[in-house]
Image 1 (tube, rainbow, N blue to C red):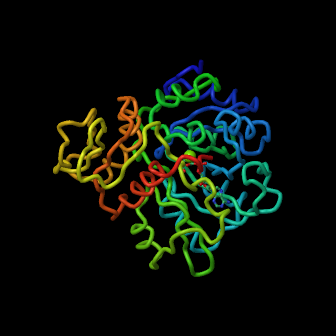
Image 2 (cartoon, rainbow, N blue to C red; image 1 turned 135 degrees about the vertical axis):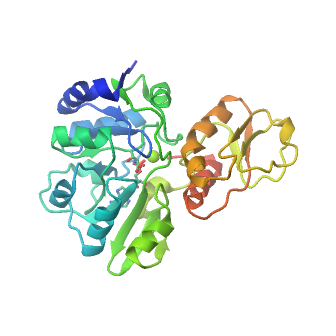
Length: 321
Ligand code: TXA
Ligand code: MG
């Protein structure tokens, strides 16, 4: 079983594992990441192995500072501005790679672009100490809900990794927002921890939604955040035997009969809801209910990313990756 060490005691052990080409689960402000040295092919391969990813989706490379980012990728002025405004933080930029940047091709699945992010806290310190970027997808087995606590990581991946660094519950609770600047267009490839509207204010233009081609967000297809129970969205009524994922102050009809109930935010705060989303889904899943009914959640602000994850959780399971 993986050892769980608090952030204050984990640095040297984490560095030793990464230097040896092994993986380490680390807290970030969004969700826990399963990190490996992005320049070491064995380390990157171990990430895919531990997650049981049947396909080599491209991973986000995490950097300690802008100088490291600029050694890896070519920044257009708009991307640079976004990095300066939102880093460290839950924003990932997709950029053209610098030639000879040392990033192992398994990180980018052979693409000539790379997804970069500068995380807050322990991850940033770890990358600075290592002196190399860390590739890190969310620390969950493929197709499962992203982990927002060290305990959730250990329960899922504990038998397959050596170390989980415990930084407590992740404050944002949703993965990063992914954008790509294409000339004058800024494309939103994945809604996430920074609301699209905040990015629109920063760049002074509307974001275009969705991928240009299939490759842009391969990890985002179909059922990507699936709990064991099936998920029913926009529930106005709770049916016999269902668990209820609530939002706000008004309950769906028949809520008293729910097998289990969690409220993402009683006050209707979307930021609080985002931070509770994955943990509450997991708790309701553990209730053994066959279906989790989800009350309607507004789509403004972080509601876009919350609804995005819930739609994926509700998607047919035959497309699991
Ligand atoms: O908050 C986060 O972003 C977390 C933490 C650990 O940093 N990481 C995360 O990684 O969510 P992952 O691997 O679960 O999702 C990365 C997403 C995938 O949808 C992948 O397809 C996309 O980023 N991606 C990676 N490289 C890309 C590229 N060059 N072009 C387009 N999409 C890319
Ligand atoms: Mg993921």
